[in-house]
Length: 211
Image (cartoon, rainbow, N blue to C red):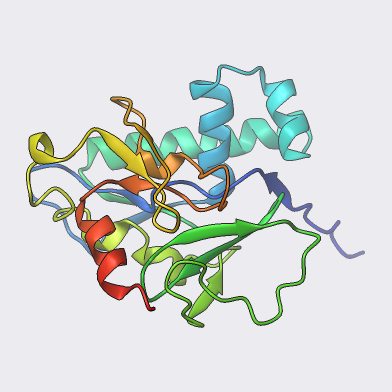
């Protein structure tokens, strides 16, 4: 008798970051703990949004016992990363997003299109590159988004950056709120994740933007 097929976990959107590394101290960059997308989502729903496990399980479209197992696994991984000073990377797992999210490998912009829209010949709305990958279950191509420049994105100094989050396509901006990452905000017109104005990421996008 074959095992019952594993049900995909439903997520609203991919995380705004690819992971976390210790701020100081020694750690092995190759010794990585993988926090699956569904484990990240479980922490967000239960611990950050303070939903009950029953409420969270319905959002992810899994049973409550399954959600409990995902949540427990996530907590253990985070605790291990904290206590043993390990690199925590977010990615992978068997998930499906409510909408289709894409990453541009040229300018690193992240954007979405409605799940009902066709994905044929998708191009980056910012730099018009065709080097586009869909952010889904794989961890590989999503690695560049924010993760590669974690140590350099504030090279100009936090205090010197404007207190604005800006859309890399239409330049729509909103005041930056302390403690709320700009890349967790979505431009209401372009469906593109916003960036900190004049940050390393913003300048990189401007430099790679094609006419």
